[in-house]
Amino acid sequence: MGAVTSSMAAKFAFFPPNPPSYTVVADESNWKMRLPDVAERENVDVLKLPTKRGNEIVAVYIKNPLATLTLLYSHGNAADLGQLYELFSELSIHLRVNLMGYDYSGYGQSSGKPSEQNTYADIEAAYRCLEETYGVKEEDVILYGQSVGSGPTLDLASRLSKLRAVVLHSPILSGLRVMYPVKRTYWFDIYKNIDKILLVKCPVLVIHGTADDVVDCSHGKQLWELCIEKYEPLWIRGGNHCDLELYPEYIRHLKKFISAIEKSVHLRNGSGLKTDHLENPRNSTDCRDRSRSSTDQREKYRPSIDWRDKPRASTDRREKSRASTDRREKSRKSVDHAEKANYNTDPPEKPRNSIDRFGEMMRSVGLCNIDCFKPTGAAV
Image (cartoon, rainbow, N blue to C red; front, side):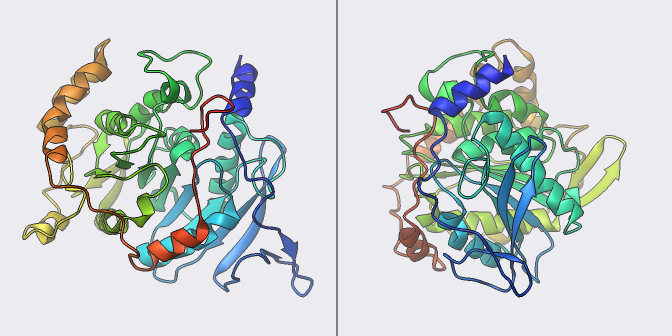
């Protein structure tokens, strides 16, 4: 049954760039791998990683001397490392993180064919490399999943009890739900994020564009509602599926999130990872990220509380609603007010020409991850 699911996914869900946007060569002087098609940097390692399913995937590891955290980035569909290389470099610089990005099996110069199960093995190989080669601890890792990349991200996050945090960028509830508003999960569905999000124990940031015509913003909102540990989400007004990096609030909000995660105190106990002093979850954020007098105070942390053992009163109703048969429908009521407040604002801020060089860099990449989950001939 699992093989059938993977076969279906491979048939209509994966569109690796053809031809790949980069090549990999070995430097004869030191036998290190390099990408001759992109700007070479001394702080970047190019790797080939074996997966447990017999494939070999290409990955890049970008070192930042100021970093205390490491971001493991699972990209969206119809893109590969060559196209994302500059974005990864910019994120590493501006967020002050080490960053590992990788190509799924069958993408770029990675061997094999793309499938749901292969992507799970791919992210495991990248994570294992961080642990074994670079000595990164689980509690210092942030998993970042964009679009289809939210699938392997949440699959791994659901199995790591000490993970530091998760970022979901234009995520999907599941493959089938992108096409049809089904109310239940079917065996043949792929990337069942709606079920796996309930198993994630660390803080989760959700970013989604309100004008996303590929994966409706309701996917991101429902995933946020189901999170156990919520962080203030970012609903980018007017943002579509593959242009969120162009909006100034995107990088500002990510910086704010990383800063909060860096300052959080993590204590190991019998129940796993405890996060103290993380920001209270809010129903929404002003997508234009206006400066407020209370901004600095929000960055300061609240009195210590064990989020796992003692959920806050503000989330009790959502926790109880998940236990009911119709949990997802009921949970929407808890954010109705926030959505109305969020939509009854002034016209959305259009993406600017640049934000810390992001605008110009993203235009030069020409990245668009829109071919996911719809049947052949109707790209998403």
